[in-house]
Length: 145
Image (cartoon, rainbow, N blue to C red; front, side, top):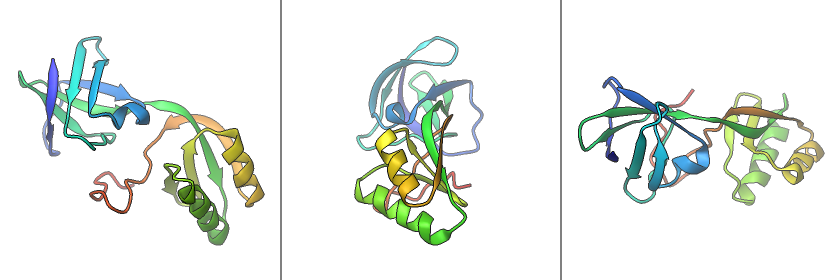
């Protein structure tokens, strides 16, 4: 089944599709729904799917997107200046970053982990959903926490 349409909230889902961030950035993707059925994504170029987004297939099936747990590094710091510097350095390297209160998260990379430690943050590798910031020139994220 082919999914071309993105829906707004307020619609119930018939199935789910769990994908890591890398796959949620692809506008063309052959994959499988969580129940095993084959699915093809054929979305407008530049579409980035977020946890909770809804898609409708040509035959009317509604699917809710779920962010898969993946290997990420979560860096923590209570000092806002240290955290801001860390975000700056990651952004300067064009690294997708998820930012929370006193923490940031990026795809696991031991070189970046060492940099974060040099900047005064504690770093832990874990399995967690990854929802990086959408970026300055994209539409505002509608799933802010």
